[in-house]
Length: 364
Ligand SMILES: C=C(O[C@@H]1C=C(C(=O)O)C=C[C@H]1O)C(=O)O
Figure (cartoon, helix red, strand yellow):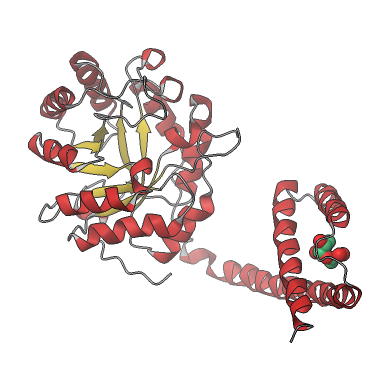
């Protein structure tokens, strides 16, 4: 992808003393009392750099609680006064931005259901022209990296340079362990393309349930994210939205204290050992590719046979057999079967591509 983002480093707009940024707060601002109590309990725990709360809630189906709107902004402004915590909220249209700025909100984010729509994102970017405020962009609900990048480009067009990405996971067509599947490779690719872009994990929306928060948060930290945005509520089971994925400010504190923040890089003392092990990996990878090339040469021969005898490229029974057999072999070798299944799906796709090419070569 050919794109360039001009990013102000995160530490220039929020000082976390080099620690991962923690944005914590309720899914929704429900009542003044709930906002103030939650804010003060978060503050007392000491981990949060920014408080979050939903003021307008995009819901999957009508009839669910859709947020309190402007009154919630008054409660949040009071919470900021009492705790000193800067505020972050989601905005989905220019009116939301205007109100957020009126009530002194410090950081805005664009939600996953907005990021998918370039018209909406452009409206937000236009409304932000001349405004100096950090804007975080959640990944679009579908795993489309270009759409995510496009949202940043639209913001940059409006002069916004304090930007960051929030990885909240991607919608599932089928029921899975996660509410939104992380598809970590999307965030890793984003980091590869734009190393300077802060990446913030949203374990709450990936998980959908409390029991998965810890493992997801640790994974986020192990992938070197710049921070996390996590939902916390004074009385989670009674929350008006996302009850099952929130935890109390104190339980969140306990969880955060248990997480391990590891160093981003190896120290110099490991340099020699590291170089030796990496040289081994380089050799093994070369062998892997030689083996793949040998397999592909046989696939090509089979393709020529198919072409000359008018046999279809895809042979489902054979593929089913390969798929099942390789996963079984994987267990015996101590490899994670799902990894091997995915790997062979890719290999099979490449075989199909190669044989299709061979088929077409007869037409030349
Ligand atoms: C190689 C073949 O063609 C395709 C590719 C396969 C593979 O990569 O293992 C298996 C079945 C076919 O869909 C074949 O027919 O055996």
